[in-house]
Image (cartoon, rainbow, N blue to C red; front, side, top):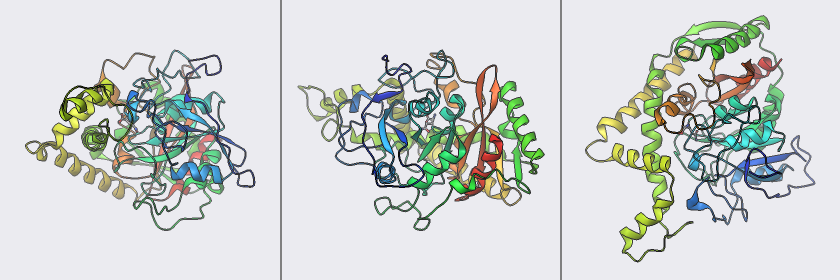
Amino acid sequence: MSADDPHNVFITRETVAGDSDSETSIAGKSVAVKDNISTAGVRTTCGSEMLAEYVPPYSATVVERVLDAGADVVGKTNMDEFGMGTTTETSAFGPTENPVDPERVPGGSSGGSAAAVAAGEADLALGSDTGGSVRCPAAFCGVVGIKPTYGLVSRYGLVAYANSLEQIGPIAPTVEEAAALLDAIAGPDPNDGTTRPEGENSDYAAAADGDVDGLTVGIPTELFEGADERVVETVEAAIDDLEAQGAETVEVSLPSVEHAVQAYYVIAMSEASSNLARFDGVRYGHRAESEGNWNEAFAETREAFGAEVKRRILLGTYALSAGYHDKYYKKAQDARAWIRQDFEDAFEEVDVIASPTMPVLPFELGESLDDPLQMYLADANTTPANLANLPAISVPAGEADGLPVGLQLVGRKFDEETVIRAASAVEE
Ligand code: GLN
């Protein structure tokens, strides 16, 4: 924390100027970039001691696209270590404060990016969303965040946490601005074979027209049950407002989502345990001064990981081990298939699915750190969209007790337009 960064939003504050000849709608805007997205020549720490001095030799595709679109990168934002957290408190660089209420967390793991936008430190920001990390901090900080359909946005240059779940997504004060940033970063990338081949010239910003006349909004009871009453009331009022604008609401059932958090954590930790094996002291970042053999040097190097990261590597390795693979990993994959099917069935009847983004109001700083399970359960409403690879947005629905409440809308695969259109009506 410093005088020019009162909420500890940035890990590294450095400007990279964009193409000044560009005339896109984001030209001249400032963009804060989550610190797990590679920036050539600017250190990229992932919020970890392990990469505290790591300077990547290349930029992520999304960074190239933002610069080509004429926006300036203005810094690398604070985050939960390797994206593992819901509050930005697992960062090795200290917690970020929520600009709306500095006693509270900004959400996570892209907490620095959402706080940068909420505090006016940047016009726009990029985050990454593996299980909610764009939508959660957007909800907690009172801004807009989009998790694109899996394959819409290149992950080239994103330091991997759980590849099969995550997407880079925009954060902005309004739906239209978030959609404009999505326009800049979306589209195929030869460097990421999981990107969808078509879709070069999107115009998501134009979809933010607020027209919900005739739109069918699904209301899944499962994602309202158990949520804080103040959150539910605020979200329900926003949904009533959509009805008043001509939308129709229908109850839908997603019985599988009660298993989403469990399935998500088994899959995310399994993928993480494999992805983080590359931090061995030889190839990237921190290396322990060790007198020992390879195993000792490796173990000592990996002491640089924080407690939450170590916990996940251990649990993920366990879930993938020969004796337990069928019991945990395979079951989680079955649950994932079931969740995908539930959404497909629901989307035969409705155009979007609405719920609270987060079932709770922003935690107080320090509140959730010693209870990882409480923190994991807060991801109940966001993880289903990652497991089903669907597009989702969080848009401010109003306030409860002076704290922001986010409404989440999930859409059909690659139907970002409908999600953006509905969200823009929530703003009105
Ligand atoms: N809170 C979730 C986790 O800790 C989501 C994080 C994310 O989306 N990167 O895994």
